[in-house]
Length: 379
Image (cartoon, rainbow, N blue to C red; front, side, top):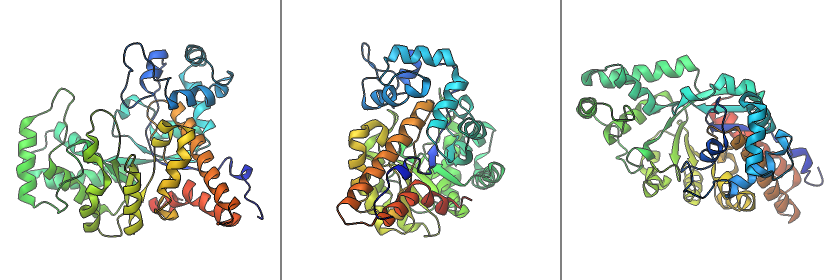
């Protein structure tokens, strides 16, 4: 094409390579408010609707529910209740025009729509991502013995991946001590000793929680053997995280030790997105996304962050994800902000004469869905 056709990319095909289910429960105003922030409910007298994300929901999700743009939060909640959770989820998920969802079910999965239910509501397809720590914690709850833990875990991980037809695995090591762990695979006796201490400690108030650095390494090296993409939470998250321990550069030695046949997927990354872009630029098997970052910074800054990542990251290394959790609104807003920001960035490059319109359209397709299809082996 002689000019970059923005309109042709308004519904750019998307593979959301990291996301969660949405709630099947009816939500009142407070329930919606709590899910609009990684920090949960706001301070007394405040609301999470008074954030870039909150304003985006009122602006872009209100019309999907037959309200005018920028409907008041109370009116929005009332209309949501009137339609019911099933209809709200269906409308907002379909408004995202997302083709495929790769769903992490390892966090509060029982409270949310399953991957199949999410796909049905969205009119798309879904595949599962297995959370490494969740498999270990299930083994502990089932009464695994310390001496058998290394073999039992490897078997359980393979069985879970097979049973769910998972296309990747995920680590939340950033939440469980940080990403500055020893990159080497631990010795078998080391794993048994660490498992004994962990299992003897027993579950806490929130159940079993694997946070031992030796066991974290053991889980990761079991995952390496599968040769599936390994997702890592990096950058900001909920208050359970210590941000300084979630910088993706802390993974540098582990990345260097992992065979290049095993893709490493850096999720979210902000405010370390430039560090993540560097890792993607210098390691053939490292990829990244901006995830929920684009939602939280809002449409006015999303394009700038995309531009900062693409200063260094190869175009074949950037993927789309929403990291949506609980609220179908997060899928709707994320897809809209991502498409607009990416198309705006490409349009600017074409208008400057630096890139051809054909290259811009090709790169949009790569980033929206092609890179995910290649890395995860999706049909």
